[in-house]
Image (tube, rainbow, N blue to C red):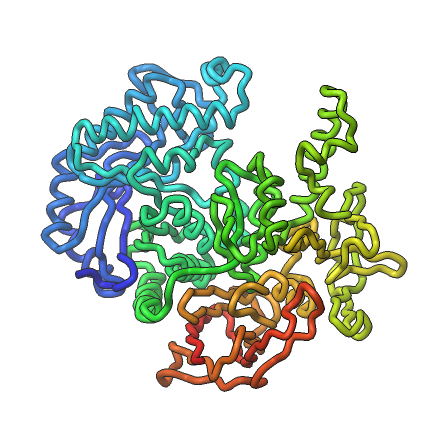
Length: 616
C-alpha cells in the first residue's frame, strides 16, 4: 500500500549519488523523505556521463530499498562524458554530451550498459537526454540529402528497437523499458524523438513536467505545460503514460517549484517523479511539497477524468509553439491530442496542426458536418500559403485552371474570406460584439500589443471581437459559417505571452468562445487556470505568484446549478450560492442561444488552488 491513493511518490537517484553514497547515510536520508512525502518508489541510475556504478553497489542499494518496502526500478542517462569511447577520442559536435548514434562505438557502449542494467532491474527509464544533435562529419555523410529531422527520426527508431529495447529484453525478458520525453515537445522531431513510433517500441512513456521560473529558464516553457503535456502523452499512449517528472533547478521562488507538482497531479499523472534525491534531500522545498501532495491526493479522489477543449497537435509537429499553453494560463481548459478528434464538440487548431497533410480535408468534413472549429491566425496563414501553392501547382502541371482547383482539392479559401497581406496593427482599443450592438463594449488597451492584420470581406465573415485604431480595425475573433458548422479564427499577438496583457473584457470574450461547448467557463482577470473533469467537478488555480492579490472570479456553469461546493474549505465543505440564479445568454446565432447558465462569484488567491463540486 503506497502513501497516496491517486499517484505514487517517486524519487530519482542519479549515478553520481549512487556511486558515492555511503550505506550509513541511507537510513537517515530515507527517514527525511518518509517524514515529509513518503517514498513509494525509487529509480536507481547505474550510468550517466561516463560514470558506471558497480554491480555490488547497485545490488546493495536495491536490497536496502526493497527491505524498507520501496519499489525499485532503474534509470539510465545517455550522456557520454568527457573520456574516450572504445579507446579513441571523439571530436565533440554534440551539445550536453549527448551520444552520436551514427558512431558504432557509441552505440556499442550504450548497448553494453543497457544490458548490464537489465541484468539487475526489471524496469528501466531513459532520462530525457535520449536525443541527438550531433552534426559531425559521419552524421553529415549518413544523412545525405535528407533533412536532419527525417534522418534522426529514422535513426532513433532503429536505435530504440535494436540498441535499447531488444538487448535489454534478451538479457531479461521481464524488463520493461520506458522512454521519458522532455518538456519541449515542438522540438522533438528535430532532435530525433519519435513518439508516434517509439510508443510502440517501448513498454511505456513518461512526461517531463518541469517548467521552472518562466523568466529565468533556458527554454520557452509556459507553466500550463506541466498539465498539458501529461494529457497529450496520455492520449498518445492511453494507460501507458507512467507519470510526470519535475525538478528544482531554476525554481525560485518556491511557488515555481510547487506549481509543477500541482499541475502534474491535476493532469492525473500516475507517478510524481521528484528529481532528484541529492538535490532535494534536506531541502526546505520538501516539507511543503509533502504537505501539498497529501492535500491534493485527498481532493483528487473527488474529481473524475480530465476533460476540456480538444487541441489537435499531431506528432512531429511544430508551429505557434506553446500557444495553447499560453491560452491555458488564462482559464481555457484543453485536452491535447495527437489524433484528430472527429467526435469532439469543438476542436482547436494551431499552426502545428498543419503538420497533418490531410488537415484541410479533415477540417472541412468536421465543420461541414456541424462541428465547431477554432483556428488561429497562424493556421490560416499557413493554409493560405499551402492553398496558393497547391492551386498554382495544379494550374502549371496539369493544365487545369485555378478556378477548377477547388473541385479537386480543399483549400481554406473555400471556408473563410480571411486573407494575409503581410501587415501588422497595434490596437488602441478593443470592441466585442453582443446581440445588441458594438456600442458600450469598447475598452482601451493598457499595453501596446502587435497583431498580424488579416483582411476579410465584409458581411461574409463576421467579427466577434476586434482591435481598433483611430481609423482602422482588425479581427481578433472572427466567425465563418460553413455547412452545418462554424469556423472561428483567433488572431493571436505576435508575442504570445502578451495574451495575459489583454484587458479583462477581451480575455472574457475569448474564454466565452473557447468554452462554449464546455460545462464551465470563467470571467476574471489574468492568470487564473481552470481544470475540468467529467463528473461536474473542476479546479481553479491562480498562477501568478507576482499577482497583486485576491481577485473576484465569476463561474458560469451550463444549466441549472443549486450551488458550488468548495471541497478544500479551511472549515470543511464551503458552499457558494448562485450570484445570479440563471443567466440567459444574449448572443446571436453562433452563441449560446437561449441557454441557461448559473453564475457564481468566488475569489481567487495567488498560488492557491480550489477544488469545486457542482450541485444540481
